[in-house]
Amino acid sequence: MKVSEEAPLGLRERKKLQTRSALSWAVIRLSVEHGWANVTVEDAAAAANVSERTFRNYFSSKAEAVAARHLDRMLLVAVELQGRPAGEPLWDAITGAVLSQFAGGEPRGHEWTDAIQLMLTEPDVAGEVLRANATAQRDLGVAIARRTGTDPAHDLYPSLVAATTNAAITTVMDHWLRADPPVAIEALMRDAFGQLQAGLPVP
Image (tube, rainbow, N blue to C red; front, side, top):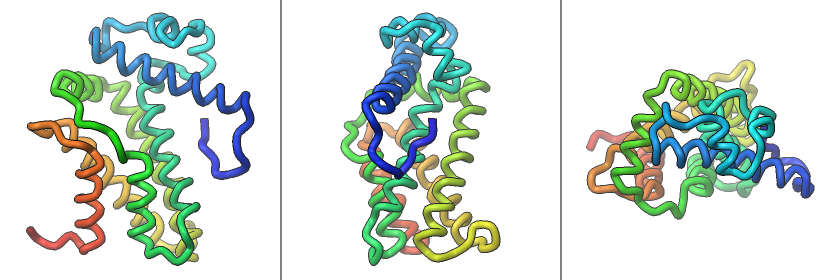
């Protein structure tokens, strides 16, 4: 389901997004608690209080459901970027857009992060996450092109900035999952994008 910056969503559309999110979280939570191989589509549907048929209307697989949370959040970064003040410097705007989606989360314990890392090694999940990143990167490139007056079909710049932003987010998320002791992801995002704004100086 594509996230759009157009007119506010109606009740039906909001309910669809809520169901989509509930199903995605159900697969993630149950997989953390019981292990990826021990969770079925039927289990996730029941946890979200919908039928298995409803699950299939939203997702083709458990892996797609897992990646949906990441995809939706990444797409919203592009939406948020387009709504930032026009005079705001680009990297300030990108940082603000990213933090709008990753701010406020408390550090997770090792039981959670270890289970997420293990889930992400599943080939189907890894493939869906890669697909989600590619989709989000294209949308972000379009948003950056609009903001900078460049053309993503001919100019390298918007695609390069989008790829850099995507790589920074992916790197932070990986670092967050492995951090010992656990840390808040917002602090890592601020650090990463601060380094990008500074031109990645050697420590």
